[in-house]
Length: 417
Ligand SMILES: *Cc1c(COP(=O)(O)O)cnc(C)c1O
Image (cartoon, rainbow, N blue to C red; front, side, top):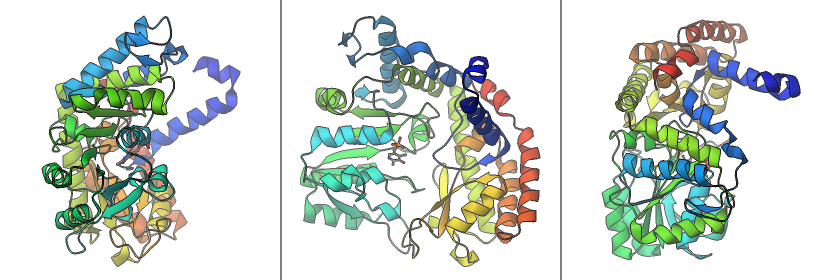
């Protein structure tokens, strides 16, 4: 960064500030992680200079021999990690990956079905402000009020009634296992295309710790930057029969030149996911999430669904007379970063929300284990009992800062590769 320091001190200082923030605070946002120095290096490389429209060996530009090597590795490693028949690694993001599948399978005005957004679904599964909600008719299945688990009977009933052309299954805030097989059976009853969006769970799926949708779904989309711990981006996988349609929909259908530096970084992350240390990392992520949820539960916090099968869970703050918004702000002052989140059947609007979402991928990358989760949950409890007490929150943030020094990012990042 010596060059940037001289040529653009303003941006240099923003990057320094963000680095410091990442080092001194506890990152509990479920969709975030710390990539390895190797991923960072690949993403910051000269591959950003190259135009490579098309696919390896079939490009519209000359000089693609080296980016072809990188993209071929990314494709082959995706197939190896997830066992899919076909993969396209060019989607710029998780949302772009979903757009590509919709455009490959649907016409404007067709009906899609996905998890009702306030119950954990994603914007790109049919939010009215998102293209998916504007261009398609959206049916949402829900979670049951008593158990907060997916209501498969309702999903089947809605599918038979509305005959969606595509059923999209996945979530940003659902901590339990999806029964992929059950959704395959529902799709087969009405001849619908089954798309699984495993954006959040991909790292656990890669490690064999969360059921894989690959055997059941026609299309599987994912982000690469959440539990998978790669650069920001997306990947689409599909059955062989859809491979050409998918590739054409990504380019020229929805994107121009692929981000070759990001694709190289995806390949690096997927290479890391093939190592035994990745499985160890993911099982620690899972153990940490379970320990964290149990600790909070013991302190009187209600965990949505009562626990978790993955890297994240939701905390219902209603019995503590707090909103998600207040909790997020107070925790941030205490050096603990979370996001407010609606809980199923939330009486509050999303901008206020009754809950927070907690995830352990980033803390685990730093090398923290169950013992540290306990410490953090005690800080959380203390901060949430002192939401208006600036002095106490500041005191906690100081303790957090000192604690973080024991888990320096650099050394843990180096040890994981
Ligand atoms: C995060 C997420 C996405 C979108 O990812 P972006 O890269 O932010 O566009 C899509 N689907 C689900 C379920 C997600 O959680």
